[in-house]
Length: 114
Image (cartoon, rainbow, N blue to C red):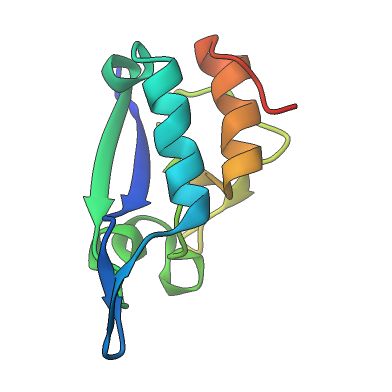
């Protein structure tokens, strides 16, 4: 069985000439991973750079879907009402911290956003 793949931005990224940024939604999901450490064994977690394009994500769901956080569902994962279909029409994904949190609750038994 293939794992769902979670993409998060690395923290302390550079945007233009300014440094030391973090993505608030990625930080929220990192908090969920801290609260529910079992998720780290149930997901393929990958950290990507802020700079676009993000080839690893683009190759899976297309250039228009490369924002983070994003959870690419394994082909045999349960489809989520929050999921969308990638540009290639094959892989489904869940985007945004709230939708990802709800999916992790339903599919992996973590707590859910309130």
